[in-house]
Image (cartoon, rainbow, N blue to C red; front, side):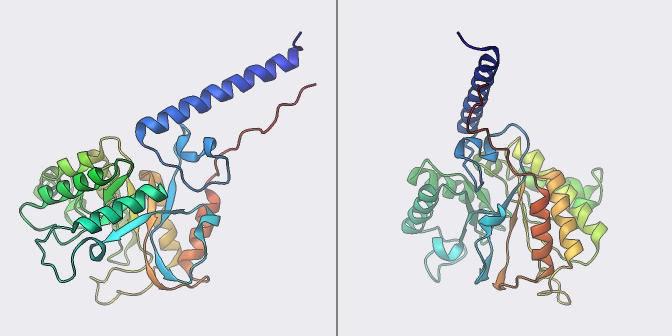
Length: 300
């Protein structure tokens, strides 16, 4: 006969198994892929029902350490040079080899695939070109999770802050609506919120509206925001300068509040003492790790 305490433990175990089964089913339905975590695969944070804020590494810093020890996940960022023939014009299509290699790399690693294709953004048939590339990738492999860097929504600093009832704001939304088929086709949206000015309230307002627009177009799909701890090259006075540590932390916390995750980009020599990296480590420490299940049942 089962003892009362053993029966309770057994029931709890069944409940845990049911929860994990539901979580795995949910993950398969949504296409969720495992990320880096200290817990066993069945307790991967992307399988839990509670919101998990994910942090991805798309940086090219030389001699950087393995960031997975900080629970920062790898992600694949494919540049135009890997897709297009050398010297090809702005209206060229990616080569078959480039498409196959990108799809194979993502399928083999299980990591999400981000396409950085900016040459088409101002072409009149841009949406058609972006859709065709996604479909070619899916034809090469049906096991990939893919999205575009900063294609939809269009990044906008000034019009996004004018107010929803203004002509500028409505024009911005109309431009994004013309790209809705791309948002419908990809698995994830990757808006870019790089820093143009050393004005924090302005950056927060710009981030809030651009993420709000991404949410509108995503229709429930994940939104992972690109951040760069360096001022944008479009600002002649500030370009190349690192963002102050507390400003970088404000950006991380703002994205955490509004989006599903952040993709950190950047390059150059690795500096372990850089303010942005110190704040990133503190930020990661503030993110609760996924709880691990018990490994045994105690029977009294």
